[in-house]
Image 1 (cartoon, rainbow, N blue to C red):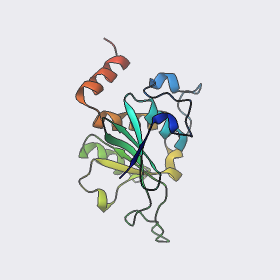
Image 2 (image 1 turned 180 degrees about the horizontal axis):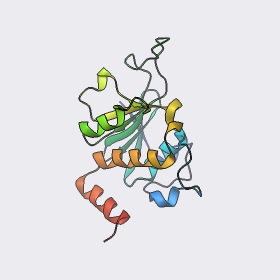
Image 3 (image 1 turned 90 degrees about the horizontal axis):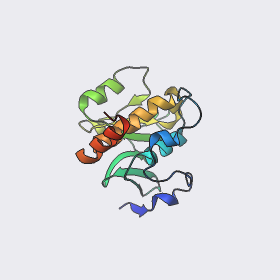
Image 4 (image 1 turned 90 degrees about the vertical axis):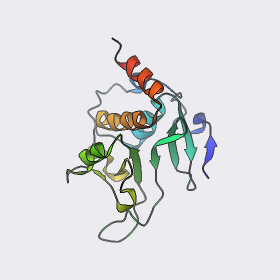
Length: 167
């Protein structure tokens, strides 16, 4: 069972307040730089109503309304290096809205996103941290925000979208 810790205890990101608006956490760059693993933490924590749980390997699991939307996965037998057979130790899981969204991310062979048989029928995609730099920070932000939207309540999602795009 995951242990619950206050978001403020996420030692790597003490300066990112829970629920901070995305625009407030973006650095001076324009978002076109290569994404980094630290960006996953920053972007996930920037979404409203986020809590952080920790799995058995002390891996962070980002949740909204007690529903996971991004998590760092422990090495598992279904995600292995095809040459060595070693388990990938750097897999990040992102929820998606639908199977169509999942397919859009994994069908392109050049895409860093993938899935395994373990995730057949599950609305999520996998990304190795070692390939995160193939995304821009803005591209990663979109994936994290879409993951949050796929798991947030309709009320929270609508409020967040309204705040970003006032009419």
